[in-house]
Image 1: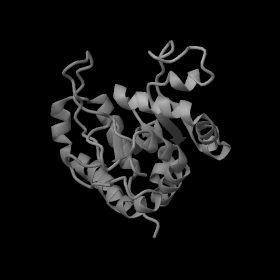
Image 2 (image 1 turned 120 degrees about the horizontal axis):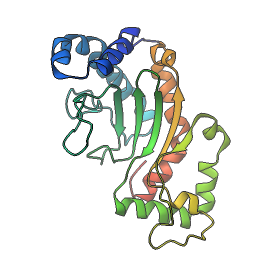
Image 3 (image 1 turned 30 degrees about the horizontal axis):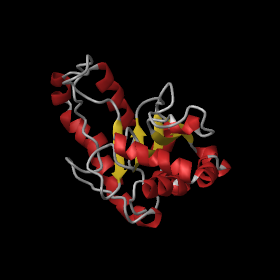
Amino acid sequence: MPKQYFSSETFDFLSALSANNHRDWFNENKQRYEDVVRTPALNFITDMANELPVISEHFLAVPKKIGGSLMRVYRDTRFGHDKRPYKTNIGIQFRHETGKNVHAPGFYLHIEPGDCFIGAGIWRPDSASLHKIREAIIEKDTVWMRISRDKPFLKKYKLSGESLRTAPRGFSREHPMIEDLRRKDFIAIAQIREKDILSKHLLGNVSDYYLQAGSYMSFLCKALDLRY
């Protein structure tokens, strides 16, 4: 049955947090955060647990306040110049069952005023994983080209992320697949609208996007010797 998870108040809160990104304001509005951000996000994750097995049995929807599919609102400010304590978006990641952090293969939903998107793939894999993916692209170049250049896939998604300026070590800069081999991220991004987040069909629509990325995710998982 169609179900609305998020509301305009969700976006109002995120916008207000962006303008008041400090602990005093957040503490004063913590119940509002619970009501319009965390609770609806956890409800969405709970229901996605019933949808994911149709896409893949090896990705998990974990509706926990801490340590689950909902990413922390608190930013890690230890190493950067930006000391704002809170993230001003909702990040939901459905990781592979073997994953222990955000660098694992996963499906993703990003909710932020003016920037909502669906993602699939692997962000900033470690060097060993990155090498495996590059080797798989070379060994199965025809399969990779068919999957990554598939018209229905590219109608919804755009391959995104950062790339090296030159060829990675051990790979020829003259290789015909060099643009793919230079990638540091293997993520596909589908931009959606705020009204899509507010729709009662959000769960089904997100599931459809994930299904469309199935071949792409399967290729990455197999490259990493993971089940899909």
